[in-house]
Length: 436
Image (tube, rainbow, N blue to C red; front, side, top):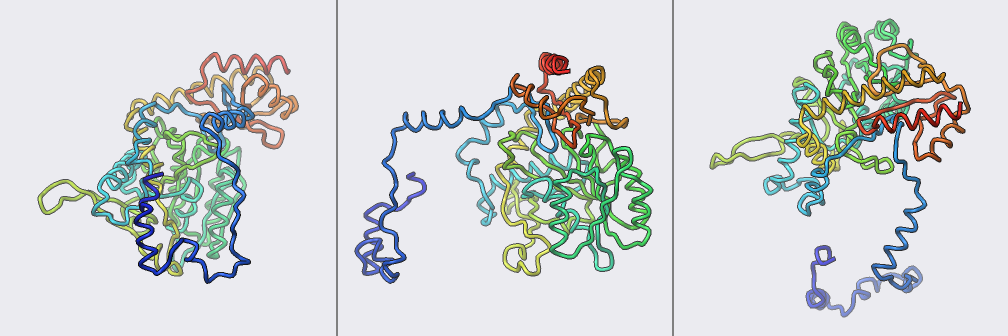
């Protein structure tokens, strides 16, 4: 604790003497005795061995699955050992907002590298940092598109329900209309979007591809429809899928957002995660959060600066276009180290392995009566019918150390990644055949 209690007993005594006091309790003497706590009733401390045993006993109550076939927004991917090795270094582990940017070169460079990699991944011109997660990044992207004479977002029910809820919550606070359209065959209905834009008032169209059901959306067509009505297109994409699919920029999107968890962050019971947000250059001034740029100092040396940061987010919050104030530097560095360690080829291999495993599983499940609900192309998630009781099947698989696909209205949403070996797939199929 030495690093967190910097003053010595002698220094504390000197400070109290300067104030004319004798003990720390004297600092609170003006408070009524009735509201002061004298006994905290803290139990006696345990030895390190005893604490270790207590924690191990608590941890043993958790169910640890040896194989996972569930996604729906958070994904089980391999994380190279170097990722944890680098990010656990003391100088990185507590990295936070670079308020004194000129002396925070290490933190600024880590953010700059992260932004560069996100731009390469999405094909966009500029990326920010500090988005809390993919859902809040999606809502912030909607706000970026708002104009004085145009307001509102159009999206399909094929978007992850949790993302839709967050967008709706954000938009309600500002009176931004949210139009949710029914999907068609599992993907966004282009004709319905065209009709929703006919009035000329919505500012943006939001699409998730691969969507909640894992299906590939007609993003290029939606971009054409949106731009034909002078609206912006926002594309939410699983970053691993971009290892083999076209980038948002190639498909015509104006803004690319998504959940960065698959890029080196463990599942961790749901967080902390990080959202990525990138856009075309003409929207750069609307980006929330912060942008780090590269420049030279007066001696010609490479250095980094906070190129753009909306200060009203911190000090004039009533006029802020965004309230993103904290910093996701550690999570951003994790993403950056992950991408640097596996490289473009490694990301493509992870994407193609996930794709291949999911398609093999879909074919084998179909033979067992778990037919796909949608006939559209998919990446690494797919929805099937469930000819048996879904909860019973989940329990049988859990007993075998397998996390089943997500039950959704009596159906199952399955997911595969590069972590699912052929042996894992066969074990899953074996249990399913027994149950059926």
